[in-house]
Structures are given as structure tokens and as C-alpha cells.
Image (cartoon, rainbow, N blue to C red; front, side, top):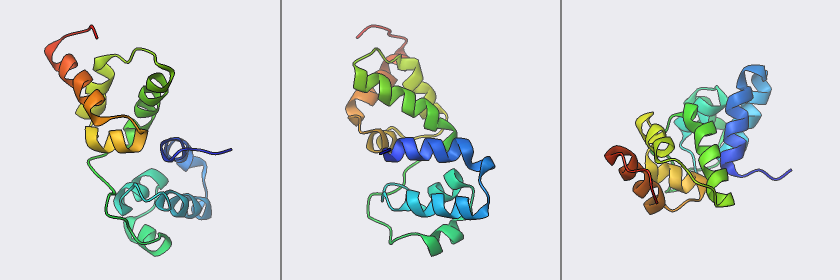
Length: 132
């Protein structure tokens, strides 16, 4: 099964408590290979320290990280799925994502959604506008 970085991160984060130490290390190594997450983000997702991730990870690329809360992974996954299917995405969902601590720029990179699209919905939510 081929997972996107977002899908893999959401899966690992949701199941990290079920993983033994080696499985968490393997998950951290796998997540770091995408080149999207910072060492601290990989550690938070996989449940290992960032210093451990540094030992397991390939060298970091230039465009990793951003303000991010792993608790937002499922919400971002839902937003991306709705966007991909052409379904309506409530502006409040995007606002919830940003207000919970994930930058829209990082969310856009991780989900493959234009940042401008996310920003328009965020602005609508803050203004209380509900139509497209």
C-alpha cells in the first residue's frame, strides 16, 4: 500500500502507543525519509526523542518543518480528502487547524493543497463567511 507522507504520519501518530521501541524507531526513520518533517516533528509523531531521530534520519532537506501540532494530522487528512474529492471544506475546519498550532504553509506542503486555498478558507472562518 502506497501512503502519502500525511497518511503515513497520521497512521504512525494514531498507533504509536501500540508500537514497541524498535517499531517507533523504524517509523521515525521512514517518516524522516520524506524530507518534509523536521527532526522534532518526526520525534513527536513517532514518539521518540529528536536526538534519536537525528541518529536514524537521513540528512535534513531545506524545506522541512513549520509550525505543527501532530494532534492536527487527522483533521488535515480529512481536509485533504475532501479537497481531493471536490467536496466542501468548512472554513471552520481550516481555522481549527491553524488555531490548534499548525501553520497553513506547512499544512499546504504536507497535504499538497495550495496555501492560498487554505488561507481563503481561514479568512472566511475568521470573518464568519460561509459561502464560496
